[in-house]
Length: 299
Image (cartoon, rainbow, N blue to C red; front, side, top):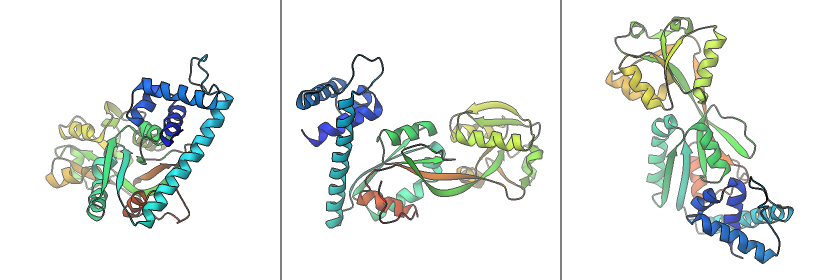
């Protein structure tokens, strides 16, 4: 029985999908099925209840899964400790993040990290927020970055930074003459928003409800870039993170208006799966983000 056997089986249990486990391990779906049957032969026990429509482990399968996790954790800890003993910072860091963070918040940190640690590869995938959590839970990535982090069992959230929400409009829009606006000033405006299930959209809707404000939502999109393009051609106004419109403000293609008073903020967070072993490269990446993790804490 090899480490790879335990990893493939653990991935199968956590994703509850032969195809997803196959993708995670770079093998065919048939190979995953063969691996599961090989483990059943090895342990002389049925591990997967194939009489159920949905993926389900037998009692013996659950016990093997728990032991597989222990073996994998011990193995990953050993590899990490050996790398630290050799002072090696290498490997690949996989990040899943939403568009606005990946395109506008993350690049400076990645540039610095790659400059300091050229032997490490960083792979960034742009995903909807709910899929970032799935990626973390299924061990598809090492870290996730989201806005308005939600409490999810087995996922730990580390505050990263706060971004200000601002109003954007076409430079010829009547509101463009102002430097700042109150929420009441947005009444009756045509509004371009994110899709209803996106956390930033939910936060904006809550702002409207708290202020008993009604707006006309004329367009909805799933990413920040499309929202900005729609505002640029004057289809409406939008509320977006300030960091996402710095370039457009400099170029004069969008007018950016602050909220009066304290304004509104959008909390960002780094996600990881609880119990995940922190490799030297992953520790250095967390350091580059400016986050302070206790030395005894591991991922």
